[in-house]
Length: 252
Length: 362
Image 1 (cartoon, rainbow over the protein chains, first blue to last red):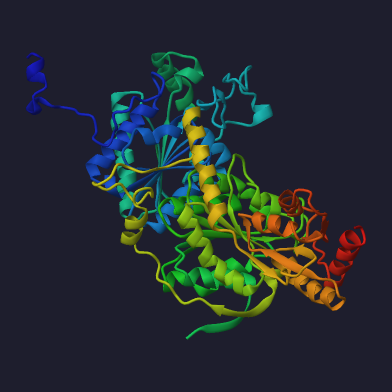
Image 2: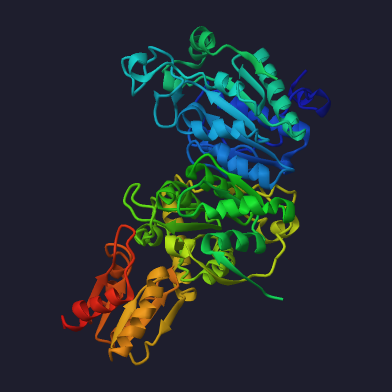
């Protein structure tokens, strides 16, 4: 089979989602953001809800997420995406509203907004990227940074006596009655990617049925922040992140 | 037929919001403005017009809800008082940076810090000069009566959407808490989704449709050249607003030797002071700025050519007086008189201040 045969429509086994734009992503090699963006795009395309989707982007590495998915976007201030999404979801209840937030955004500066949006059971999907570090600002300590993990603001490793234990906010959120589906996923292997896509699809389907807040954490890598190559990052995540942030459904 | 009622200023804000077809109110309790949300919750407008009313977890969340609602082309608002308005500054600068319309009501109390729950006008700088970070302005309306509390809700939304700019009603605990007769506005229907799409679909997050590219509401621009261009675009917009939207009231100014400049509750007190002073034979007039941004600078410039002095009366340590001085530009004396910390000046105090600070000093 030569190239001419391979590109024939009948031999097509995979294509880029039509929801993804052609812009070159600014994410570093090995970063999980690109994969998660792709999964969201595929879900939106498969559910045929491009015109019904309003997305809320955060502050952090994914601040420019609106460059990559062709749906209407609202860029929120750091941590405030759940408040922005609350108003959109209430004023436009027929739409599919989702926020896309990192760990600094969601689990530190935006704790009030996420907890209360979940408590009100806002009919939104929250995609929570947890890589245990502030990527955009250059690798500072996040609320989810593991004990002993070096970052630029914990250069000798996170000292939990000084800064507290890493925050398992997803466990907190699972306890709130307003949340309907709470899950923790990853995208480090093809099998994990498929599982994560199923979770995102379920979350979007659930808000279509007005079931309340859907929360999908994706334990992610940050090769640049962790100062490891992409392969080592995945290994480090499996060995260190997963024991503290175990994968699986927490609720729903 | 017109409907008249005796109402508190804060209650009227709520009533006017429902009647002008407001889509959403997001608030957080703080004295002396809690009646706004209380009135809305009692009225249950969601059953009447479909208006969304939500008590947020904080002022920060409330203004970010306004940000989200404004982004999808809806008529949305919040209200608070000074310490709460400080918390809203983050959201306000994003809303100004994203060029979105919304209405914010500040029922001012004395500060700094937790200060007092009594009325003051000490948030002038914050409201008129920006408040949050970056180069931006709100359009600021200063009602002097419960009637204007009613009227400025609709006017605020009108100006907000005309210029895609956040609008603030800057009032205080006097106007918010006092009861007066008010002619309520007629009911206007809320905009339908189709109307919003037609009017604002080119920029609002109404959901991407086949006939347009997707919309992005953002205040982020990482390219310095393009950010500078955007800053110039904002400056041009503010200049247009300065050209077209200055509103003021001039009382007894035509033959005046002296001008008192005062807005909001201070203008009500100063109006009485003008009557008392005129009875004493002092030819004094009152200039009441209705818009604080844009400020009636040109009117003051023109008056400075024919009067002997200005007295700015405001319940602050002297904030608006700086704008009077900039307009007068040294031609005649400009002085400030004000009470602080929730104290309210009497008309006689204002007359005495005029005599001692302007007339005798001259």
